[in-house]
Length: 145
Image 1 (tube, rainbow, N blue to C red):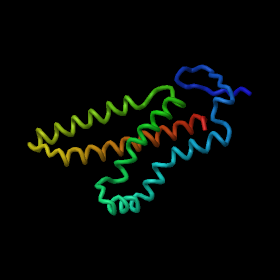
Image 2 (image 1 turned 30 degrees about the vertical axis):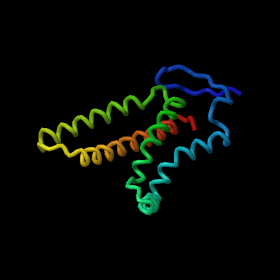
Image 3 (image 1 turned 135 degrees about the vertical axis):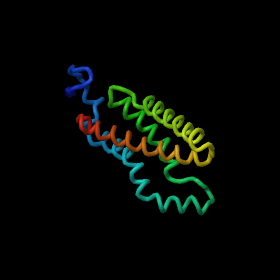
Image 4 (image 1 turned 90 degrees about the vertical axis):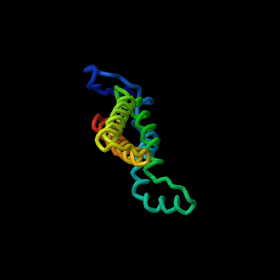
């Protein structure tokens, strides 16, 4: 069985074999599960943060979710998108880090590294969440799932 998908970036018809394509329910459920893990973790973040505090870890759920989202964004962009989004994500968060450090250094005349990394890591989380959600919506829009 051949499934035809339209690839918008190349404006050509791409043929995929049914075994490669995410068409069956058994292939679809793990993908949806892996995609929903960060959102489910954010829902229970208050409880998870309390568990981290019980064992005296000073990390938050957001700190744990960011590498997972970047890894899954890489996998989603390799499998279903025509471009890889991770290099653009790294360039964006690097430029924002440079701009934030420049702002604190030249405008505020003080660069507190703890405050800088805390604010920058939250900005990285917001950008990762937006790009992760956008990639998932784009994959749904293209009809891959």
